[in-house]
Length: 457
Ligand code: FES
Ligand code: FE
Image (tube, rainbow, N blue to C red; front, side, top):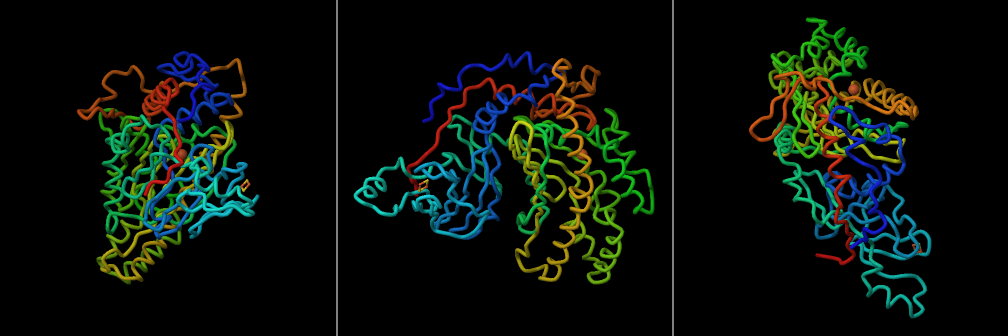
């Protein structure tokens, strides 16, 4: 049990800093608030850590982060997944310097203490009557995250013993996650390598933006126009889609799913083309060619293959650090108050029951990778530029407020559904208002944080 003493003093009046229609610039610029977030948000709630497909075999490991805490995600020889602190219990050096691998144990590069992939201290060099005591005392085992759970391959962890079970925490957002997975053979994806981007700005700028339908037409104009140019039919379609988002027609809506999560559904696009707005064939002139070849080679089957390869036009955010966008898994990793890693993992499908065949799977996966040409390769540059420029703009201490009041107070615009989720036009700032309320609740709460050193089977 970690003492709460040192971080108990309230930093600010959170109700003053987070109001119904605005938030204070300090949320993005104050290092003390950032430090508190690492405990209250990244320590206080479930955080996405890694995907099971990244450590499929016994003794596989991958390094990850929980807020700023470096972790080694291990699968032991019995298949148990653990989130170990990547920090030697002797003098604190990071133990594992590899991104991934397969190993039963980790040896500290400083004095050579050796730990099993369960976290257990196995031995130290030059025992001298000292090692025997150490290996018996659990306080020298690696610290580990006390609660690690998976939802359909997504591994989450929390340090907060009082957090609800993961399933309850995810709540209604499970449904779109299920749909996102169930379209693939065997209802699963394999995570592969990532586009690793970095920006000089606070992590929440990316989270705010991932539910922001308002910026799309303006910020991504060049991307939308490029896509349209490769479409032979209605050249204004991508743009008008966003522009006509009205409360009456709701061609595209945003749904706040509770606990800081969000879902944006763009699937009416599917009616005209598989893959929707970011359909693979519209991203690159070469796509048409690839697609044609696929149709030639596979005939009727090509259509459903293209659907599996294309970007599903949904956008799913799981607070605080996970976003499913198209067929990518995006992870937001805070580095400092003003620096963030934004990592875009590609995903592939597997020939689960052998009906697709090796060649087909290879072709589909190649096309899935090519969807990265739209996002992040082309479009994410627009977003990251915005984040960095916001961070700069917020360096004006007297100009304090950031507004997120679009749609607020307009009658009949936002609907609360039976399951408690809230639905409104995609261009409203509904998501930002709702999730920051959850952020405020967590910042006020006192998380019951603990680490574990006992090795459970
Ligand atoms: Fe790891 Fe000394 S710091 S063995
Ligand atoms: Fe964007």
